[in-house]
Image (cartoon, rainbow over the protein chains, first blue to last red):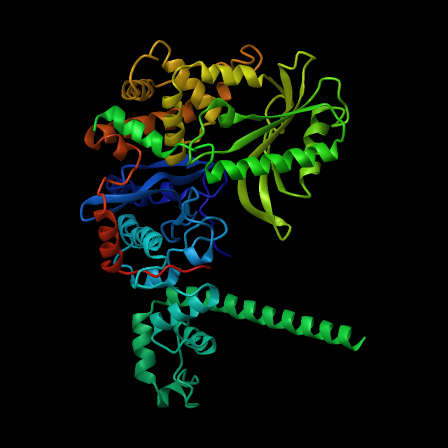
Length: 252
Length: 298
């Protein structure tokens, strides 16, 4: 069982008490966004106010936001909630039903981010997101830098890009089983689908991917892929049950 | 442009004209709410009227909730025997057409989408009962707080705002509250601003707004505010405690600093006045980001 970091009151210790440097990192980043302020609400730290979208040294627009920090910050990623009604709640605008902005497929950001500073988070995915929204307001589409498909399809595409493997869920799942394992074996079936064992097939390829993909990231992706597989299984089951019900009705 | 004309331009952009789309939607919803209530309580003596910012004249585009006040006459029992019944029965009467979310004294209405909560309609229905036949004071049910009922007077509140002579500054306060996501009730913020602007009604918008921000930024403890409709009975200290005041101070300081360095537009998070170049800058910036990230939808 994972040991919890408990405070004197026997409640989980707040992340900014455990890692004051993470809080310093946030306050430093705020100098670039003076209209955001840090407040504590119900034992959680939240950044509130307006996020200014800057370009060529000018603020081109701003959006009211709340940025929530998860209990396991800085390991967990902040969540940006978009306030107001300027951007509608719609998957097409990448706003989830709880008004959180879907900035990216999280693992894609974790795999490619230049560093884990909060300022980098504000300057890259958050700025890109709102720039994309401003672009959308003018051109009725997102910029050519692209967007992911919604839901599972986008997840598969992103993982395929991260791992450099075909965008097929079962193939990605098998790769992640290997990469998430601390000790992979040469006699395991090769993920390329040749039917041979790894030792006699893509040994170097597997080794390279292991070098490029941290185990913690592979484990995280594996967890998400398993959720997606389960979701697809349930969907298939529901469809089968619906078909059976329809057949019974038609027969009657 | 002078600082006052900057503020006036901000207010102009927030103006909701009577023939705007927003107003048309609100009026349609009001008609729907009134019809649903009159049908559910057929023949009952009820007063249905606008309240809130619509009646006070402080509506702005970025925050235009419409309060619909539904008061039963003091001797009317068809809406319910007591305040709690009235509150619940009005909610029940609206629930076939709307998704009703209970707030402290009001019922917030959402559209229904497949039986679940859909879009917010910017409508709050406030059920209550007049205290007596003069139809001035009214009691509202309270879901939370120390008391289960609240004595209030709509007209007194409206008059307090309308005769304050500082409606422009109240609208600016409201805009700042929305944009900075301030955790203070609009009612309390209005009272703070009116209190701080006593004797300042002849001053310009810039002077008034700077004055209130300066006092809030300088003062370490909250000021005392009173409910004009019930000064002795309603304790508002909970609406303006030290935590709320500290947040107000924080924002007031930020706004003053921003206004000093780049004008009121910057303090309110307005886009810099780039004119037609703005679209070109955005397009160029969005198409050439250094590290592209692809938004998703989970």
